[in-house]
Image (cartoon, rainbow, N blue to C red; front, side):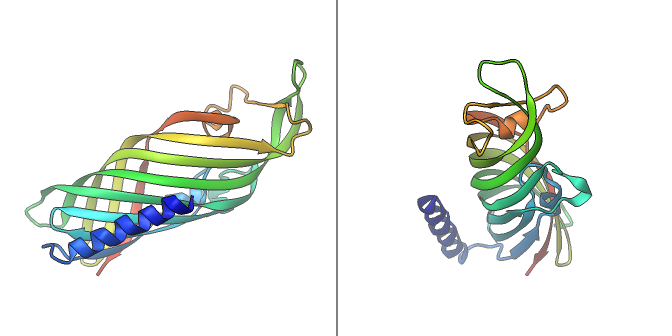
Length: 217
């Protein structure tokens, strides 16, 4: 993980140095309010974007913790972790008024979080019976995806929304179950949880859709 973070830092510093000769020299600080209602990776997220010419580079860092806005993730306690995303954007078009910009971007990131899951069904090995219990979970995820980004600017205020598609490779571990071989059983009502909480190593798709609020200077 340290090597991944060091790589992000060096790439980001390199883009800052290069950007000094660019035509578009605005900086942006952005906040992601939707991070506070994310059911699986809730927390506080802030990002910094450097714009240069037809390109922009953004790094976002999130502190993952229990926020529980609107009751999201009530069965997930003691959330602790972090998320790092580096994104490179290419400007596609400008409006006549130059207050709106359309980007296409690619992102790479890493997520590391641990938490406690409560009130779940567990099935002991080689049986059909189940019990209601909990366990500790650790999830490490690598992200890669592409997005379409639209920025709206009013003086120094930035409103960004984006949507896209990507792939997550993740490694999920369960600890402190009643028995180590017990399997977490997802009922029919839990359609999304198996994608993020099933034990093992696997690939899953993700569709990032969110809004960010920022300040340009």
